[in-house]
Amino acid sequence: MAKNRSPTSILIVTTVSHIMQHVYVGSSILLPMIFEDLKLNYSEFGLAIAVSSLLGGLFQVVFGIASRRIARHILLGLGNIMLSTGTFLTGLSRGLIDFLCARLLSNIGVAPQHPMGTAIISEAFDEKSRGKAIGFHYGVAYIGNIIGPVIMTILSITFGWRSTLCFFSIPIFIVGLMIIWYLSASEEKGNRSGKGEESEKTRLAGDVILLMKTRGIILVLTAQALNSGGIDLGILTTYIPIFLANFLEMDAYERGIVYTIGLLGGVIGPVLMGNYASRIGYIRTSAISALLASLLTYILTSHSVGAASIIVALHLFALMFLSFSLPTLMQSYMASITSGYNRDLAVGIYFTMNSISSSLWIWIIGQLIDIYSSFKPVLIFMSSLGLISSTILISQFKKKI
Image (cartoon, rainbow, N blue to C red; front, side, top):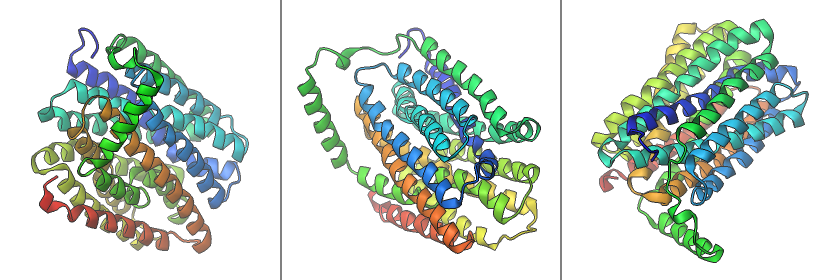
């Protein structure tokens, strides 16, 4: 870890980076405006989000592998700088291709946050406090999900969505530089040098095989692949703003408030659930969360135009309280059964697989909305995926993982 840096300071600085990344996630409140201004249909919109997410997500395992030779904090800082550039270019988009390319650059910039951030924190804290630290890291970072929609809603109404994105690219860039400076000389070179290319490839292949044989890894990857199409934060932050704007017909101010209240649940959930799971088990808590989130997703079908804003807001609060906790719980489990650079690899594979499956589901969901011109069958489909995932996790209760 960094010289003369305490675990708490490392946690705080790494979490600041994560907050800015989730400010970008919060920019999803602007998607209805972008959707309309660029004159996209749901299939084109879903395709652009899916392709950029897929290609960007593949870089998570690339960064996980790269951390064997390049310091984690350098990769994390450069990721923020790339995200800043992509956010700025999104504000300049004039059509589908511009939007897709800018989103791709942004998603590549997001890629190192989870494998690098989780690994940095996991190395700084012992097993007893690791779950709580990771829960703090994710829960506090989700404040960005709230800051983003609130400020972006106000600025976009005043200055437009393009100027809003260009403005937000500035603090993200500054944070990238801060990460590189503050955590400078933070890691030993050790295994990053002095090894032949063939030896490195052989060791990496062996590490992947060993990781896949680790009890519970395949389970987590399978469950998350299903979650990503139904109750994961990626699918929810992509389509919930569209659901509020185009199907519940809420105006910009109303949906901004409702969506922000929902995201508040995503801030509180990971912190509380991470601490709770450290006592009863990460997989057990994940299963319960996935089951309840699936039921809440299904109940979204009961809302229609004119629904009371406070009811919808509280509903989204409960849903995101549970669904946003799932990545924290599953990563904490993976971090607890891996160590060293295998931890980077494990989290990198987790998020790469999540990005691949999420990208496919986002595209499929866009297709389904176009076909049915309604969110109801789509929400039922999403709920079903979550229920299957929770069933897989529940089947592992006796194994106490």
